[in-house]
Length: 389
Image 1: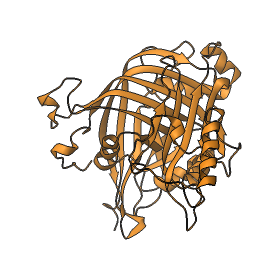
Image 2: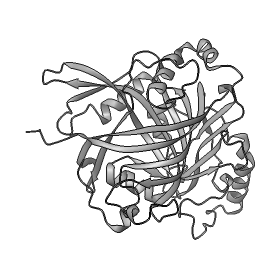
Image 3: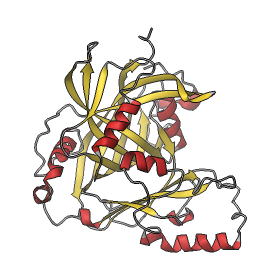
Image 4: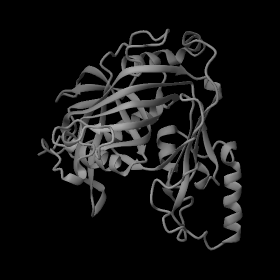
């Protein structure tokens, strides 16, 4: 990876870093093989202007992605260049906390010869989107090691049992593109767990055999490291802990082109894994709110052409009604608070605009656990353009 030229103001999350006492929630959602293949061909297998010495392909069998939420209460860089050497305590200036939401799915990366022969398949994860509510984390992820991370507002409902989750996320966007459209804080994602599973993991997998391979991969990828629940058998891809992402900087004069592209490999390792809980998937609510700002993402990744259900989730129905009353009172636009674009903004999820239809997704498997997370950037495994004629 090209070395990042740091300054005092950008030292907080130089990799590697460690997050202590992290809480992670994961939900398996079914995905479409053609959509996964299209995504890989568009972002990894195309020529920019040359092709990488790899070929990325979907796994065999049923396709699943992991929709994840994580809370990192104490994150600190372990890079020796940072000022952590001046104050390693948990309250030092270079320790921070943040929430994160992401979608990731496993694929096979093959070595590609000059004769277009593919060999040596390795399981890696790709991450089409990831959001954080901390601007330092977003800057570090985008500009230092190249993750395509976005800033969002996130609210986790307090007062629930430690492993339960009511998570709502919003971002600045536009409901409907038009010459008079305004940007506002739109609700994007709602996730809520409403009960643990009374069935064992073994019974869940017996009832849904499609999940078996994906749960094995989760076990081999460190999600249940050291304390695998009963029923998680060894993964056929024991090395599946690597994340590959396309690091790119767009040309300011041609947004369809990039002045730099490279494939960056990184790794997250979970230690001290504890408090593993499996949720009843029938009691998990997952809904993406439909707006023009996010419709393309939902269509290309989740294979939906339009909303599946009218209105917002029941938890936010009253908030949507309040928005409608305000819009009726101010037909030329609701007055915007001076700090409306300062994220993260809301103290409650109902500060977001929920007056939209939604795409409801089925969680086929859900779990949570606590751990310490060690993150490191391994290398830039390919830089496009260096070998082109």
